[in-house]
Image (cartoon, rainbow, N blue to C red; front, top):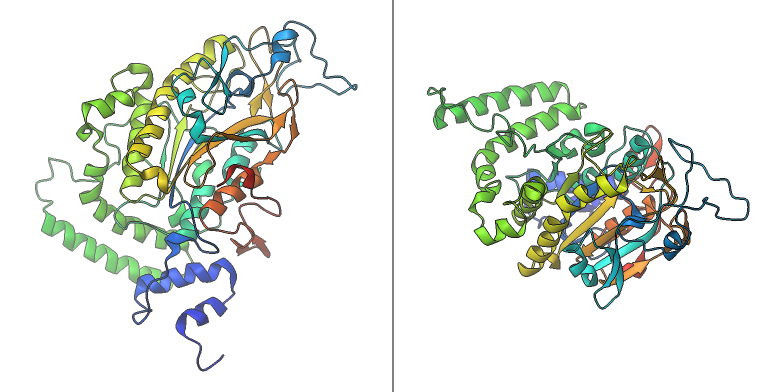
Amino acid sequence: MRNDMNRREFAQSLGGGFGAVALTELLANSGAYADEPKPNLNGGVHHPAKVKRIIQLFMNGGASQMDLFDYKPELFKKAGEKFDPGDGQLVEAATSAPGNVLKPPFEFRQHGECGRWVSDQLPHLAKHVDGMAFLMAMQSRTNVHGPGSYLMNTGFLLPGFPCLGAWVSYGLGSLTDNLPTFVVLPDARGLPYNNKGNFGSGFLPVSHQGTIVNTGAAELIADLKAPASAKFITPEADREGLALLQKLNRTHLAASDNDSRLEARIKSYELAAKMQLSAPEAFDVASETEATQKAYGLDEKPTEDFGRRCLLARRLIERGVRFVQVWSGAGGASNNWDNHTSIVKELPPMCLSTDKPIAALLGDLKQRGLLDDTLILWNTEFGRMPFSQSSEGRDHNGGSFVGWMAGAGVKGGTSYGESDPWAWKAARDVTTNYDFHATVLHLLGIDHERLTVRHNGANRRLTDVHGHVVRAVLL
């Protein structure tokens, strides 16, 4: 080793790549760089970052692209006819026999200066299209919920891999030390397909997994404070108990330093102690003005749950949480975007519950100046078929679906890609899950090919061995 090599250069020489960044951050936090400034990971690692924090809105179940954003006149012209894409192409469905062409049961209109077609089921969101970039030809490798949700969240079809939020937490670290880095706000009706697997840390240290906050529970975070009946638990006794617990845990960790679960547990105790002071204020949406609560739909039953979580997401990123994931829809055959039985009956309630809150979130972030460094993502695991299932439902379709993004670094009023005349398959400028993840990491100042961790003999990354940045939708 060179005699003139400083400590940071030494850290970066220990394996190189992104592991060195994590080690640098660890040493900086521990005070090992007392004579050097802490590296500015918040401004990007491999190139200047446009985005500091992310709110991802995930529509669980497979939102129907041709009934929301992908307007196809052909579906109206050929409604009721046998679906025949021509050229002898084989037509199959995931859970049913292909039916006849099913036209969208809702009106479409063009909105904004960009002229984006949007269903009349999303009237509030339609007002913001000039600030959004649409990925019109997204494509999945599967049409099954479990693998599809894993792929959209982790980049792999199978469980056991870190999700996007965990990679972001691992790569960039925290913006605050009194709230979690990665928070998940599931639907009050239940967890999505794969349950907690969608927000796990995989082979990354356990401390990077999503912190689940159940907003439908009486207590958002269980046991954050002592019960009123426990009069003997005083602030002084609490501090002494935590100090003893930390001492015992650190002693145990010294003998088991290869177990990230123990380290994560210690960190969670330390964070919980800090959250006793910070969380009550951060989660107090009642402190927002009446006008703000009404804008998010907290005064209406259909929008109250999702609206509350969108408002909470804004409050959390405002206070330093780096990645917040807000889910719409629970796992199962109903109460989600998996509309097998009836598009006309099942899709409107999901649109109604999310349209106003998402529009309010976009407007609120813009008004507060938070869109300058915040990225908003709208995703689903795959789309639906252009033909009917039973009489008026739609089956799963991994061939084409739509996602959009808005905020920092995004070129508003644009779109990329195009599906075929039926919205059956992606036809031009396809966006894979890997391309999507590569683009998000790029906005965070990360080269997706260099964000790697050695695991079981392979350099693993979020985008596996694939992925290209979709620069057409970026500033």
